Image (cartoon, rainbow, N blue to C red; front, side, top):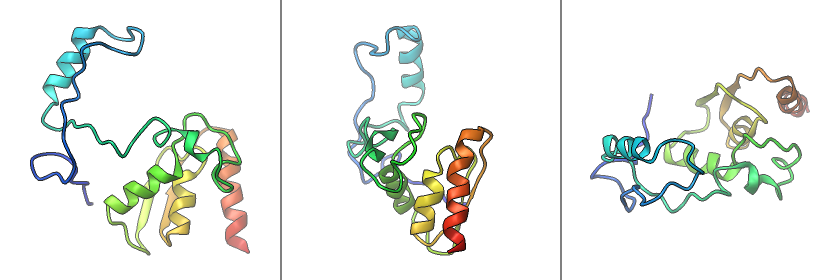
Length: 139
């Protein structure tokens, strides 16, 4: 199994301290608890400016024909999936496992890249994506 080498001194990305002077999520947790976690993991945390709120959420899929047809707020963008698949250097014929496949974004992106993909999802509404993917494979 490959691991993505984004962290540490050999990283090809600019690394900046993630610590902030104030917490922006309406006191979901105590400030000192968040700062303690950031300090504990500061050697592996970094700010990657390639990712913004739109890319790491469903928002970027809204204009996409294939990925925008079902609104799944808990999902993430096809663009994010492509970036990460490229970072992991996943090659055609390899298999991707998505244990929380949701709206099937990972499965659909994998299919377009010639990858095998296996998805697991418990929510019935999300089975629509899997069924659609299966129908597309029959053609």
